[in-house]
Amino acid sequence: MRSPVLRRLLPAIAVALVLSIAIPGHVPAEGAGVRFPGRVSWIAGGTMVVTTDDGVAVRVDLTEVPQDEYQRLAPGDRVLVIGVLDRNRIVAITIRSLEP
Image 1 (tube, rainbow, N blue to C red):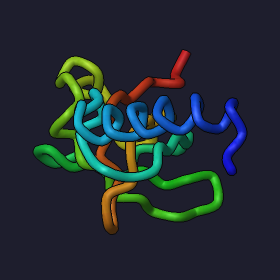
Image 2: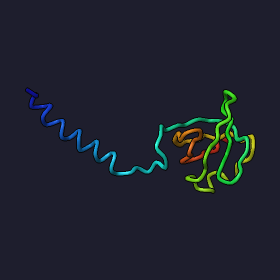
Image 3: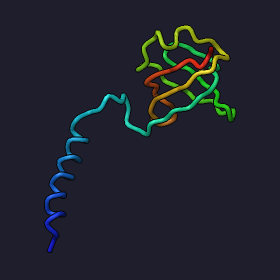
Image 4: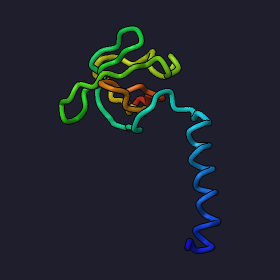
């Protein structure tokens, strides 16, 4: 027999699970959240390549980022990329300049 606490807790867990699946969040893509610093290698259209401090080049999709967050960036600028992992790229939510 189930305990009374478990009997009250299971419906709440089920409702929370259903709501978390049914109500979309503000994240533009399904995937793990990521956050990393690096240097801009290049920007073209809605794509930017950022090289991490370890020398790894990462393709960043800029379509969800307001243009004013990245329009003044140039190759070599330090940035912080915040976004989500989507297959072989990062879909950025925000790009922060780390330049003084």
